[in-house]
Image 1 (cartoon, rainbow over the protein chains, first blue to last red):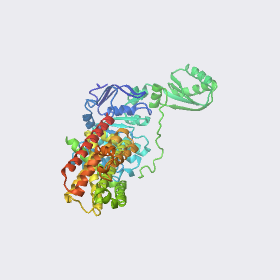
Image 2: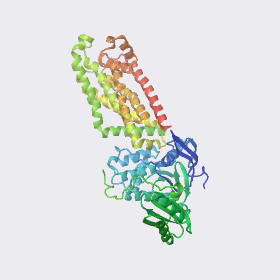
Image 3: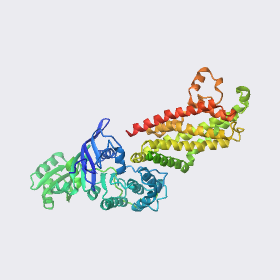
Length: 336
Length: 254
């Protein structure tokens, strides 16, 4: 792991307390330059608090944070000069046009007047907002606002960009567009991204390295492939009837634990999740064991391990996403 | 320093553009002072000469209308800042490397420009009823300058409330503070007619000196003592409100 101070983004024992709650509880990080770092966690897990500390918006209660080798608390202004940030709420000004907002952000970030028009045009092209550039932002759809917000984070060509849940609430088309911009900037310009997300697919697709945060602590960290490899087995999920007899479930679990190749077994509300080698062969035995224990099997699924399985193993529960991604994107690109 | 100047200029221009793009918001700030001017003049002007010794009550009331319009216009900044906080745009500004002082200065300077425009409209509209300005055309310039400075000073109250509370209703209430200040001043009659307790309160009220300075220009001409009092009062008020606004900014961004 890169030394914390030499890393693009680093943290040592980062803590943030709010009245009656510790939101971030001793986070250590070292994000390498040119990396896309995914910070995966449920709502309220401490993702946004962490990003606000790393971007100078919030003072840590304890610990140190570094961006591009600079101490975030001691040199906040210089840190802000080097980073781009798009927060969870696209903080835009409805009365400005998209072009005006980008130009203003550019000037406030120190982009020279003679360069600003060309840079704004370039960014508008990248995020496909050329046609809407001279319309007021209040008329933009949610997807357009998110893309404009992303463009505003890039206006001064930062080497390090923080994105706080960049696709939450976006339709699939807009979400895919944001992912492509991130991939393109990371690949072509070597931009380091620190992105928080509650979407497993997003972390899996974009991130070179993922940290799973739960209750303010990092509970697992590594590349998506390495994290999934830690599961070391296939995942068989056996859905049983709601309100199944607890004794029968316990009996089934005991029997499952005797099977060869078993890595781990967990019980959820209406399912038994079994991590087992060669899952396709094990399914028949598993179903028999569960039925023999007196449970009705409703559905059985077999899957390769996902980040959700990693999340489940690390936290004891599935990653529940509060704001579901809309399944239909038609009309999202229409102006309101 | 350069970043502060650029940031302040850019944010002041953004705030002025807000005004241009939502003129409806400003209609009340013009209507209310003009309405009160005509109602007050209609009710009192006929008895002003025999009762108060004021021959030109319209000119006596001109500073009240100007001050009222400016206070209304200046109260909008606090609400605008709350709107930025609620939308997340305030955070976007905090994430730029410009000195954070520019966020407050930009608003205050824009308010100065808006107040100057408001005062010009009010003075132009009422000049038909006030039989001119005793100090001549330059008197109008000084009235507008005083109004502009008062606007900047007064908007510091709304900005402070907005930054401290993040609540639009509370920031809007900043305008209500103006009414006690107005009614505890010689807005409708010279303070020589006040009861002693009222005269004392008027004597520690900065609006009193502002009104008396403007009235001097409208009724008497160039009386330097009154003008000095007017400028001192708005600078004093400005020093207090600007300090409060910067404290509120520091508190919010700490």
